[in-house]
Length: 137
Image (cartoon, rainbow, N blue to C red; front, side, top):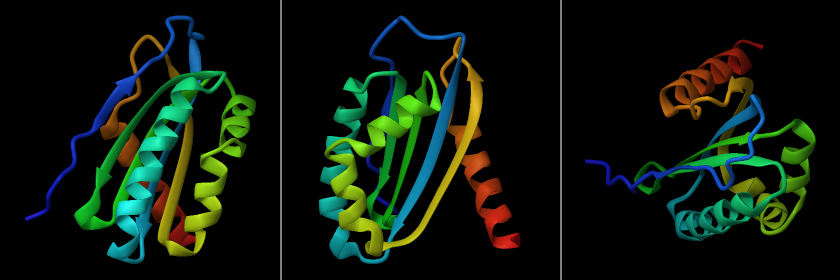
């Protein structure tokens, strides 16, 4: 039986949001359980970082430690804001530290109407589609 960590729910740090936003969903699977505690702590730090990043519309995180899998869902004013946040700390150091510890990483992007937050069902579907497309390529 898999032990599930609670989802950090969609958090929107500002009410000043554009009509549409760039949404990014990601799934990271680690090679080893040995890396899970450190990656979980890093993911929580990055979650806090992203909530303060310029141009963020909202973020959510799912951690599934027993599956060695972590999911992120975020929305941004534009790609430039997302790219800038990725280059900041602690995100940049975490990418470098865990790059070789990943057995799989999947990303997907889409435009979303911000009258409602993006949802996990759509994010999971799009991640599966992105994984299938990558395997077919």
